[in-house]
Amino acid sequence: MLGFLLRLLPFWVREPLLIAVGSVLGVRIMYLAVSDHNRVAAGLGVVFLVFTAIRVHVVVRALRARRNPSPAGSAAGAAANSADGAAVDAAAQAQAQAQAHAHTHDHAQAGTGARPGPATPEKEHNAWGQAVAAVAVFGALAAALWVAPRVMPSDDVTPRPASCSDGAHEELPKAYKQTPQPVTGEELCKALNRPDLAKLLGTPGETATTASGTSNTAPLTDGKVAQPEAEVTFDTYTVNVSATYNELSTDQYVKLMKFGDEKAVKTLTVLGRPAVFSSAHTMQFQIDLGNGGSGGPVEEGPLARTLSVALDRGDRGGYCEITVWSTSGALPDDSALLDIAGKVLSRIPERLVR
Image (cartoon, rainbow, N blue to C red):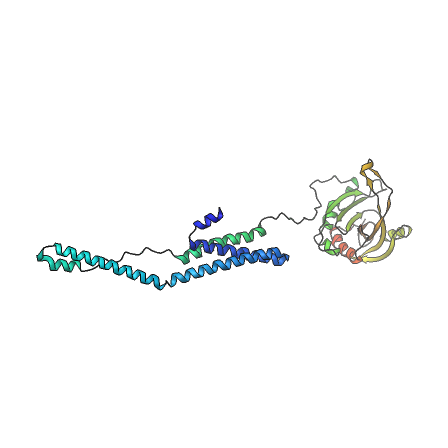
């Protein structure tokens, strides 16, 4: 069907059309072949470019033929014109003999006078105008096809980073109303789920797969101590941030670590506040859904690295903990936790003087 429609088009529309389409498709396919290192696409692009070159050669020959007509054609035209003139002369002489003798001389002169002029030639179509119009129209179509993949949404959609808020606002426990300026789990999640978090962890090409925040209370406190927390998960690392609004100072916290299982304890100062690094193993367990949801024994999981920072410069109680771990057991440098702490702590108000 397409070939039939092309044959119906005039030569000076069809050929520029084929040249425009062939050149655009050939260049585009060759570009994709080079970028994707695809030999099949490169061969197809060469076919389109060769086809376009052939059509250009045909158009050039047609233009030369129109500008320089052949000598044989000109001689044939001149002979035809001479024959027509002779026929006209013979007809005029016959008409002169049939007239009266008194007007023979005048009619003879009239018959042999001016010959009928050549017919006015039909106005030729502007071949260059047709060619330019065809190239312009199909050039615009080719440009639209070229730009469309960049404008229209693609089927291969890049996954978006996980969002913190699901639109539902949970009711805060009573401990949050009794604590001056506490942050909520959602606020912590927004502070942690930064666009540059993966870069701070040393994995800039990753995207957060899950992000969540909860406004909990600290265990074993009968719901009297607010402890919001947030967690963001990547393919490589998982980051957890919590803020505990208790009366425990960093110095007391370090003493408790010495009785626990924490390792590589190191005290330091972060943003003018007392802080401490520590390491401890996470816990892992498995649930077998095939046996009624029964689970196996709790086992020791991969090592996690934690940075604990006081909630205020005077260390009057309470701390913020930033913990990072991975299923493979790999951990980022401590500098990554320091960078994250600098970003998150700026969103947590310092604890007021009591």
